[in-house]
Length: 369
Ligand code: GDP
Image (cartoon, rainbow, N blue to C red; front, side, top):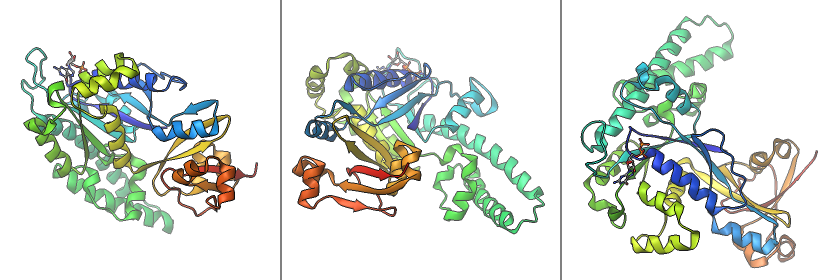
């Protein structure tokens, strides 16, 4: 599944948020097989009301939400790229995630020490960006050195290496300017050529502004939140406002009391819901469904994936042997009630290898084994 890493300076609320989200996910999906891979990794179920509707219609024995893997990446401090704190270990953890959630402290509390002495989102964001930039700089310089020494005679390899050099040189300029790699508009062939480096500043970032509960109803009143919003847009990143403490309290309440608690704070949705939406938007994710008597299941794919690629998310054999996909849109399925009824009504489509899977498609794959 998709992996998101939580980063942030010490004492900004990372662990509070991580624990709350993982607990919350457990309660949302009692059937979901949660595995704690190691103490700082949790699998988070993604709530989706459409899943329950489909499950009821199909009288499924099991309902399985789609999920994101959340990694708590602790230990990022100033100097991490030079090996301070947990340093390099933290950086290798980041290399393995698909997106970065940076918690930024926007709550004032004199009892909780801020590493820099005061709450200052811009400085927090700058510190972390700089560490990631230093790390990428070092990696790119090493790689460019190697490419410059290359003596390949293979014309195809030459073209590839040329594209990689050109891409890396553009990124180098941006990094020297304090800008992340993702801010550089590279042509597709250069993008592909540098992909194998997994640059840290290429990863999409969502800034999570951690506010105090009384700020949740109208977070824009908090000047720190305004500052995070401004930076997020400058850095081509996403943003959500959350109260880690409220999430922690929510995770301890029975489900039926949560809505009441949220209402008492004058907010409509939990921070987790907003965070999931922001992640889906930023990464361009889509959900499709499979449904039957055995189980109803939601699957996460990247926008633009074809039917065989989407089938491959379930199992690589589905992709290899793909023949076609019986496909009904979510609304048509709900109106028809079953796949059979959808077929009779003529709203079921037979889609082939080129079909781009759409948000909410209900799919049944036919494949050769
Ligand atoms: P981490 O070092 O970033 O993982 O931070 P923690 O999650 O351990 O939080 C540091 C301290 O800040 C803890 O005592 C939390 O209870 C507290 N904290 C976290 N979020 C909030 C918040 O929204 N408001 C207030 N007042 N305290 C918070």
